[in-house]
Image (cartoon, rainbow, N blue to C red; front, side):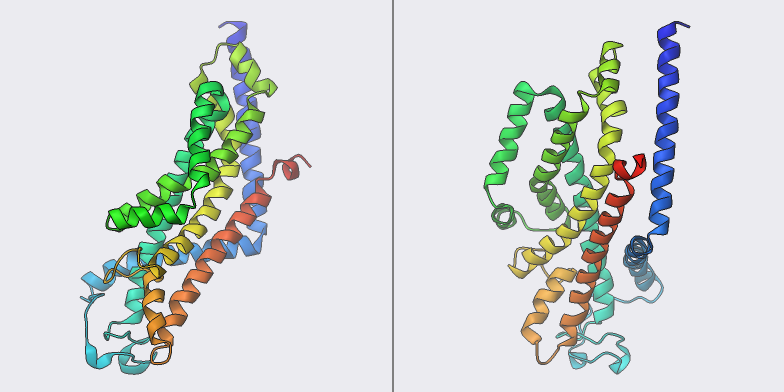
Amino acid sequence: MTLETKVARLEKAEAQRHSRSFWRDAVGFIRRDRLTVFAIGVLLLLTLVCSLSPIVLERVFALEVNKINVPDKFKLPGEGGFVLGADQLGRDQLLRLIYGGRVSLTIAYLASVMTVTIGVALGLLAGYYGKAVDDLISWGVNTLSAIPPLFLLLIAAAVWEPSTEVLVFMLAALGWVGTSRLVRGEVLSLKERDYVLAARASGASDWRILVIHILPNVFPIVMVTMTIIAGNLILTESGLSYLGMGIQPPTPTWGNMLTDSRSYLVTGVHLIVMPGILIMITVLCFYLVGDGLRDALDPRRYQQ
């Protein structure tokens, strides 16, 4: 075994030791942050209820989310066996909220992961290689930044029917700009660090440097960004539904349920309250988790 190999193994072991310490310290910090733990618990509870309940309700209780029963329309919460009341067509509001949450959270989770993946990949390439690669990616970033995303989403929704899959793709294809800029700026700083220069001098490939040495140092920022994006995507879906360009009824989402209920402010005020509360709570929890992760993964706090 050569001396260079031994040194490389020692450096790798030391880096892994510090990495484990950093993440252990971050997890311990989050566990002591009661507000962040509460927000994570609420998101997990909403995710589990909205993911598993529809299966149980369909297969065990044989309930249908779009079953219409006009005589039960505008039933108030607690009347006629409706826990949260019935809508303008006599459909169970609680059942539709659960199904709508599954769609809304699916959009938030999948689109945020895809958005961050695209943004991180392009940001790494632009920041590390620079020159023509950076110019090309920066041109795409500047072009998309010059056009309000909502206009592009409305155009895309007019061309393609906004199903869940299409909406996830559209949001991810247009939402990676901010993440790419953030990652590019971090990479421009990281690639001049001593450990990266040492890895390059030892003959490490660009792929190894990006994945092993640079990406782990960008990952904490990416995690915080992804939680903020997920909350924003729920608001974006609700905004598109309000403009009539979101997922169309009868498929329920929190956004289109809130939009449909605005016409029944007097006769069915209970139809407005719960979708609005769920959107507010979910977005707030995403922001609180992002704020907690930002504090836990702050390298300055770790160094202190």
